[in-house]
Length: 274
Image (cartoon, rainbow, N blue to C red; front, side, top):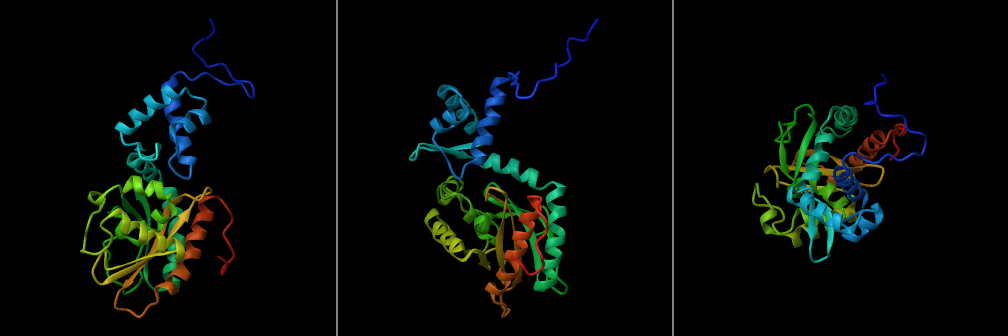
């Protein structure tokens, strides 16, 4: 007797009705939001995915309850929530990104003579996944597995500056969202907006004693194929040194671009380009 439990093969172009429609629609909504440059209205989700608007609202409410999406009532828009960023960070912490990043950071350390690290955004924090220590440089707090407030770090500021402004506002809606380490750094949304505006204008981020007194860092974001900040690289140096942060940024930005190309599967760029 034939085994009727097997799934029949599909012909090219043939659609298959999902066995769990609600799960299918939920995943499609998250994927749709991840492709947008910022939060979008619920009606755009319904139209773009062909899902009844009533179903979209019910699913969004459940996703909001679990922090996978966030609602911006003033704008009547929905964006990805902290749990979605944590999920993305879980993927980014897997070995492929670390393996791709280590040789890029090792070369950067050789050229800069300073310690470097690779981090991913994890909600309102950054999570460090690779650290390359330069010879005769002090140990840093940015060890692998450490989480620090994104708005205080060079890596976090570089990634936040590459996010849509509405998404940053969703992550940092009020003063209670801002952690403190050394008494320095932004403490309210307006201060963070001003800081990130400067990062966008320069093309790189920096912090001076906001993570550890006596140390400064310069950071640049690593972008995926749609321009989303999948990670960031930073170089840390003693704040009392005469090193020019812009000089370090000129070494850092090509390294971040090279890692972005490797993530996208492109061939490494020729030495000196970037």
